[in-house]
Image 1 (tube, rainbow, N blue to C red):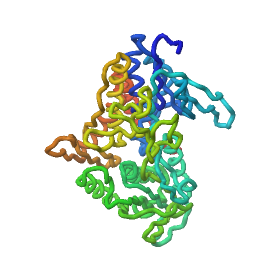
Image 2 (cartoon, rainbow, N blue to C red):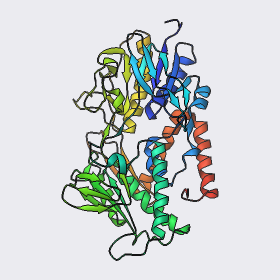
Image 3 (cartoon, rainbow, N blue to C red):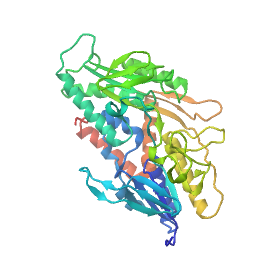
Image 4 (cartoon, rainbow, N blue to C red):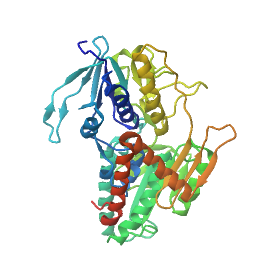
Length: 437
């Protein structure tokens, strides 16, 4: 290597990767102790927990959307747009696939980036478990692009439903959300609220209560199965008040252009179908560069977040299988990726100084689930031995809002977070409550 300082390459600019790049640049880059390069397939960053709002049209991401090039310039690191196509550990190089434009023409050829330390933070995608019809007929809310595509399909479906004659016992429009995790539950509430707002803007021939059905299908025995039962029951109760149908213990066997078939024999009419069940790491990670991966394509790492076969390759977030002291694995949650980013920033600095690294320990701060403008439910301090503090209603809504602001502050600083908040307040006055295109 010809660099006088080590080159740290971070692939993936999600909640963990962007925080890590920013933190390392402040701690090492500005002191000329390292060069930091962030790689991402997109040009902008949107906080993944707001994708359900983006899909429903109740949130305009442009107020807080972070442009990687600008953010890199402000914080002293380098950004390169590209998708990971390979890893050459012998040469310590990552291979980036050719970058193509919207018309399919090549913008940039295949490129190689040298590294001294590599961090993989490419996140996860939904796992369809090979279910027939999902790829062709369902939308997965993995990225801002897919969330916007869902919103366009939703508006189109509403316009079509306007011209359908009423049929007794059959809704003009049916939305099926497959997966009763946070994404499915939160999107169900957002869609119910969005339908009411859309009706006020002229799409009033579709009555949200009579002409629209929203169904959540979950394979386990309750929604929000990864969260405390009390939180799950509170969310189900809130959805019932919104007339959202919740089907638990049901497995999907096929998704068609206008239906969802269940293992029990039920067939649900479905105008728009969303697949939000299960997660796995991207397929390109499978045994990349000869590194150890599991059945979900996650890179298997040590408690220090170093890969098991190369101490110079780290991984964090949903794409990493990180063991915890109690024998479990770090959860695929935004708060875990954030905590790992902070820990890894310290570990990389220690690594460069030849000091021992600290193992990652997940600290459960609880869970919050937003149910649009209606309510929120959650539990705080879930890691305490005496149990968690259950909250709901306005307090939980404020806590959810503060969680979002903490992410903005961690990435952009207090000043820009305040400017983003001011912009959001102005937009509430000058723009419709729902994106109408």
